[in-house]
Image (tube, rainbow, N blue to C red; front, side, top):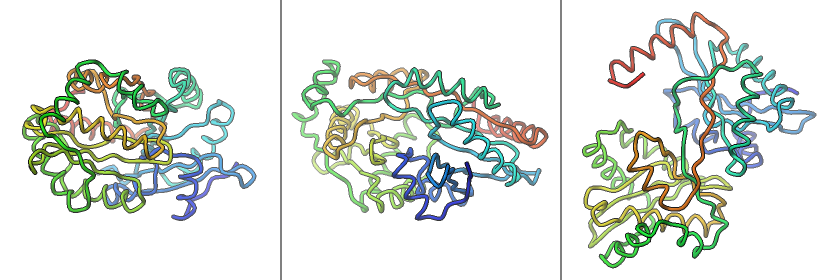
Amino acid sequence: MQIKLLKKDEYLHLERSLHLHPLQSYAWGEVKSPSWRPMRVGVFKDETPVAAFLILTRRIPLFGKSFGYIPRATLCENSEAFKEVFEQLNAFCKNQGLSHILLDPDLPFTDSEKQKASFEQILNEAGFMKQKRQIQPNRTVVLDLSKSEEELFSAMRSKHRQYIRKAKRDGVRIRLGKDRDLEVFCEVIKSIIAVKGHVMHDCGYYKKVWELFSKADRAVLFVAERDNAVLGSYMIILNDDNAYEMYGGCNEEGNRLRANYLMKWEAINYCKKLGKKYYDQWGAEPWYPGLVQFKEGFGGKILEYPSQYVYIYDRAAYTMYKFLERVNRIKQNLPF
C-alpha cells in the first residue's frame, strides 16, 4: 500500500466512490479553514483506492508543533486491512511532524453494534488509546428511509403523530429555504442560544457551511412559518447515501406550536424522496434528556459510536496540548 496527498478533483472522486461522511468531505476541510489546515490523503493498493482521509491540523500554541484530527473516519472492516492502512497513515503523519492524531471513527448504520466492537478492537491493537471526551456527538438516533412513509409515520410515538397533525391544523407550514434564508436561519440559532445558553457558532460559520455544501448540492434548508412569521429552521447536510440533520431548531413560538415536530417530519420525507437511505438526527446525548426523547419519538434506532481515540508521536507536545486544552475548558467553564 502507498499513501499520497490528493488534489481537489482526486479527493472529490474518492469522496463519492468511498461514500465518505460529510465531515470527511472536501467541503468540510474548507469550512474549517483557516483555523485548521486541511490535508487530504488517499491510501492505495496496486493503484486501487482503499481509504481516504481528511486530516485537519492545528498548531499547538507555545510549542511549535501541530496535531491532527480525523473526524468521522471511515475505517476498514477487518483488522489486517486496517493495520496496513494505518501503517501508511502513521508514516505520513510522522513525516508531517504531527505530535498526535485524534480520530473519531464513523460507523455504518447497519450492524453498527457489531462494527463498533470490531473497530474498537482494531484501534486498540493498532496502538490507539481511548479518550474520555468526544469532539463529535457520541450518540445519535437514525431513521431507516427504506421504509414507506406510512411505516415511518406509524413507527412514531402517538404523541409525535398528534403534534404533527396539530401543527398543520394550527397553520404551520414548512418550505425549502434559499440563499436569502440564511439570515432567517441565523435568527433562529440566536434565539436558541438566548433561551438555552448553548455554545454555538456565529452566523458567518453557518453561511460558510451553506455556501460550500449547497454549491455541491450537499445541503438543504427548511424553514417553518406561520402567517409569514418564522418559527424554526433546519440545515440538512447530505452525501450520496444519507442525510445528516446537523444544525437548527425552533424558537419559543415554534416549540409552542409544535413546528419542530412537523419540520422534522417534512425533512425526513424530503430526504426519503431524494433517495437517501438513512436520516441521522445528529446527537442524542443523555445529558439532554428532553432532546433525546424528542428524537427517539420519531421511531429511529439509537447508534453509539466508538470513543474518540488518539495516537501519540511526540509525548512532550501532546502533554502541552492536554494542558492547554484543560486551561481552555476552565476558561469556558466546561466539565472535565
